[in-house]
Length: 160
Length: 101
Image (cartoon, rainbow over all chains, first blue to last red; front, side):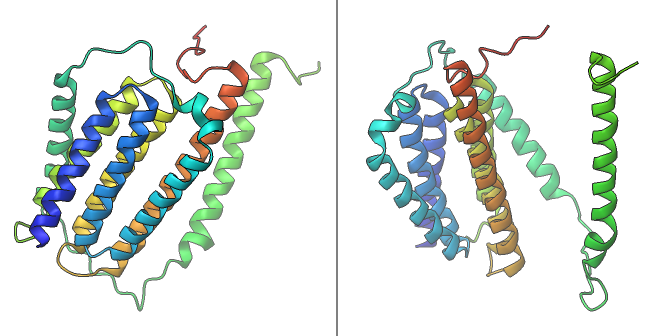
């Protein structure tokens, strides 16, 4: 049963994602995205994330309700087709998929060290007590330097 | 799945590639947000597969909801930015008004 759900959900997800990639109409893209979300919720269902799957279905229902309610207002955004349609070319998709698969395989095949986290000793207070304030100070400093450099470059705010 | 997480990683790789293609090839703002969401969904499939293919894993669930929250923030920010762009330039083509001087 699990295998059957997996194959149906994976087929729905993959076909919907390819249809999104090769449809240039916004309306059709959104329609196929709903199918994609349905397939994703099916995958989540068999991956022990039942709550997430239910939330995804609820979001999908909300999306369809809003679609029906606001269609007249949103039609000028939705009923739009991209004018300059690039040619359907499978080569970039295949190359990008191969690259993504190789990268995912590299991460998956590496012999990762098993992290033995001792939760009694380690806590995350250092993130808030030490690292986050340092990061905020660095960000403020960077913003001051960038804005000062920008004002010097444009000549605004420099009175001499 | 007796085969493990290989099939899920394969599905996730294809979805990620399709999302990247949508992101790179489209000019319409709604389609660009769709592409980014597809890429986030690919990472969600990976997270759920690695965390919970055998049994329920609470830490994986936390990561799943965290990434979903970031994805929602991304969608909201994207819609806001593209609406402002639409109001300013009266077009949904976000690559039209970019000029490099």
